[in-house]
Image (tube, rainbow, N blue to C red; front, side, top):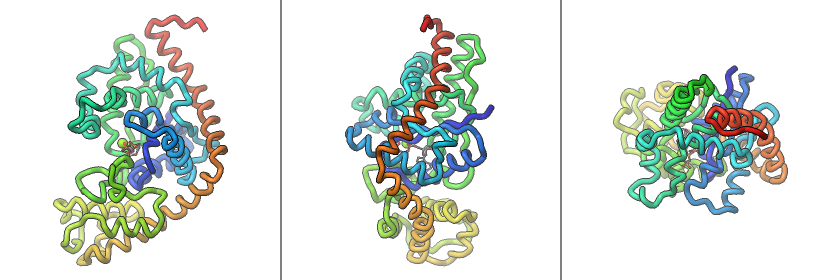
Length: 334
Ligand code: ATP
Ligand code: MG
């Protein structure tokens, strides 16, 4: 039976990239009636420094964003990772299955570690193995993610296949990444070759789900672009990453094709395009941020929902991880 698992790190404010590349798709899967498990991956967030109070409020804010976007905690399992011990536990077991050479090939570690590779946490390096544990602890079949996470889901398949092979079992299903539709990689507003990220030091590089209409308009107005007018089709935008990104965002928000958007703006400059883009962004985001505020007015209720989700998540994952230990030769007598 199909089961969806995916997560988002509560490492800052959720962005338009997280919404278009992940959250919006999470809601679609839920609406299809598939079993959906969605996790606020706080154990991943601490791979880089998080102020404790900020981490707590970011986690509640992320939970509010999920529910505001349409995740129904009665139909989807919604919880924070650290409340379910299966993740850290299976993470360790899979650290002993994953190979150093595989981890060394992960491009995101190189991007986030940068030139400081000696100073980043060991956890940042091991993070893809914990992500494999997150996915495999639920015998997940499909993982909706943005384009940037494709490599980690493929690593998860490699880890699952090696486990099955080494222990001579057909235990972990190999999960499929689900990366489809528009805007699976939204780019930074400051640099069209970098992806938009909630942990980017520049707040101007991204639209946050909590930004008000004026901030959204200002961020798009200041977004980096070239001085050329817009062409009539995407084919003419290959060498203009910033322009391509803004058209891509517009199309993803309005539900049109990129060429349909361009046919309306052909010959126009960014002075016309950017305010129109801000309008479609506000039309989508304003109701979400209003609902987020309502949820955030009652943090105790959010915590209660996350606790209930965690209890349901544990029911699925605890037996799978216990069986994993048993397969590996550990005594299981309680
Ligand atoms: P961080 O900078 O802390 O890594 P992030 O913005 O990359 O934050 P993640 O929590 O790492 O967010 O990823 C959550 C989900 O959002 C993943 O499925 C990821 O692929 C997706 N995602 C992240 N950034 C983008 C983006 N710019 N465009 C589309 N999808 C994205
Ligand atoms: Mg990320």
